[in-house]
Image (cartoon, rainbow, N blue to C red; front, side, top):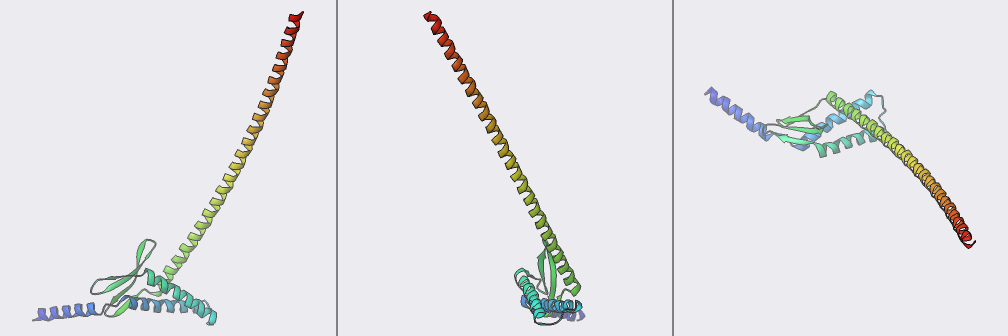
Length: 192
C-alpha cells in the first residue's frame, strides 16, 4: 500500500509539474523584473538622480534588453520543467528555470558579470575595428607610395627610352649624312 501511495504522489507531482510549466512570456517577465531591479540598484549605487532623463535612460536600457530577450531567448521544454537560454559567445547561457508555475532567474551578480563581459567584448571589438582600420589605412598608404614609385620609375624609363631613341635618330641622321657625303665624293671621283 505504501508503494502505491508513493507512486500516486509521484505521478500526481509529475502531472502538477507538467501542467504548471511556465511559458516564454512568464520567463521574460521574471527576467525583466530582475533586470529592472538591477538597473534601479545600479543607478542608486552610482548616485544618479531619479529624474526624467534618468528614467528615460533606464527605460531605454530595459526596452533594449527586452527586445534582445524577445528575439534571442530560446525556451527548452523538458515536460516537468523548462529552461531558457541565450547564445552568447557561441555558447548557450542559461537564463532561467521554470517549474510549478514559478520562474527562477539568474541573480544580479550573474547579470552584472554578463553585462561587464558584454561591455568588455564591445570594447575589444571596438579596439579590433580601430586596429583593422589603422592597418587598412597603412596598407592604403603603402600601396599609394608603391604606385607613386612605380609611376616615377615608368616615367624615368620612358624618359630614358626617349633619350635613347633621340640619340639613335641623331646617330642614324649622321650616318646617313656621312653616307651621302661618301656617295657624293664617290660620284665626284667618278666624274674626274
